[in-house]
Image 1 (tube, rainbow, N blue to C red):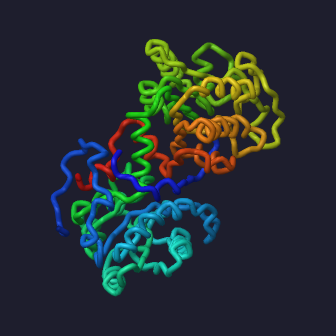
Image 2 (image 1 turned 60 degrees about the horizontal axis):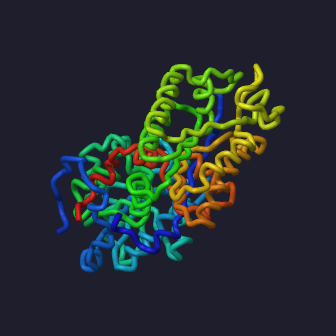
Length: 440
């Protein structure tokens, strides 16, 4: 990857967590006609001249889809992650208008999904007012943008207040792009969606380029998968084989070692002929697990499963627990975390690795009784990065939340802002929001 800036390395991000073991010239341009591209070939804001930015009306797609408790932001990391790009644009004299979604509004505007709190927090971080415009399209938006001065920052209201946003409807796209001169995509978390604000507007705004956060995500995630230093390892956790099988197979091709964790472990254990009690199992994917193990053996790759498990008599924070070997899970008990011997084995396996990608937790880290496996492997990765200079990448989703909770986020090389986008990039899929950007 070529386009990156020193400011990028200050960024880190998190996403909402869920249980891993739960049982059960400026102007119009032609449309992009192909997604066959190289990430290195995409333009970034640093490829634009000062004249291309000064006084220009910039629409920037950020990801400010932050968790809220009422109107209170409980984690502002995604907003903080957008600041370097916005500061750069401001410094070049651009008029900046931020667009984003928040939550999943069902039928038009809903006050609980208003970007008001996000505009307020962004203003605090920038040290200036960020005016919330009450819509994302229409005369009010045009008036607000036209009235703004160089260095001003506006935030348009939630794009998903219109169903046309996710459908990428041409008429809506044209209205969204109308007040602006150029487009910047800095929302990696939605880059895997061909929505109006992520892909559609590039058909009407030129230049369309990437921001610093998007560049950093691609630098680490795509760079690690295609050119990561060896030995390379992947840690794949989460509840279901069905949701991770594609990324698991892709990483098995690229990595020397793959550690399996989370609820998906028990489908693998069942595939090995072991009893798993009442643990989460996807019976329809037992044969898939067998095929993965066979593939690993044929490729000469190391597929690492737990050797001991923390089991519980129920899925509850107050459940009775015990630590048992994987071949001794009692009837009526469910596995909810890795045991200490598993963590020790993982540490030994990762000791010589130069690149490690983690996607998914090892257990139900939201419950204190079942967080040691996840926090244990987070500590291993953090120490590898801090003490040995290994590249450690937390690839989105629950593993990000676990890393943040552990207090070791600052020791990782990179923490991704994307859940689904991270998965799809690791799987080797093309991201529409990136494919649509200008070539260098």
